[in-house]
Every structure is written in C-alpha cells, then in structure tokens.
Image (cartoon, rainbow, N blue to C red; front, side, top):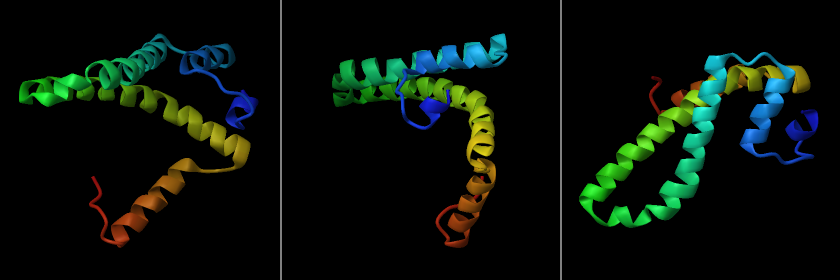
Length: 119
C-alpha cells in the first residue's frame, strides 16, 4: 500500500478497493459506496464523455446529459466521502500532514482574499 501512496506503483481504482479490503474492515455500506463510485466514475469517463458527446448538440440532449452527469457525480462524491477519512489518516500517519487543517486554512485564505463565500 505504501508503494502506491508513494507513486512507485500504479493501480486501478478497483485494485485499490480490493487492497483496502485486505488491510481493513470494510463495511457493506462502505463497499457499496465505493463500488457505486467506481461504476459511476467509469461510466462518466468511458461512456458519457466519449459516447454521448453528440447529445450536446440539442437543448434536450444537453439537459438529459446534464442530469446523467449530476447523478454520476453524486455517486463519485459519495465514494469520496467514504474514502476521505481514510486518506486523511494515511496522510497523518505517513507524512504527519493534517489534510483537514490544510483545507480549513485554504478556505480561510480564500475567504480573506474575497474569492468566495463559505457554505
């Protein structure tokens, strides 16, 4: 796992999910969210962006495509929500890097510069 984190090896998302299951308890809910995220990601990349590009020509096609992309995006983000605490823990343990603190600091800097509003 460390070799992947360090970039010494490349793995597919499916392989990473399997490795995660080997090294920690993965609940049914977590596995479902990760698998749905993987399917949605693959669909978005391999099907929607390549095979459905012609739908962008018509207003109706764009509306349908927008709905499909939004639904796929929600699934990918749900998978991200499941993985984020694990990634943050790895960052803390391996690199002594607090990702949550870094994110808060970045948001505060953006807000101070007037670049966005906090949600």
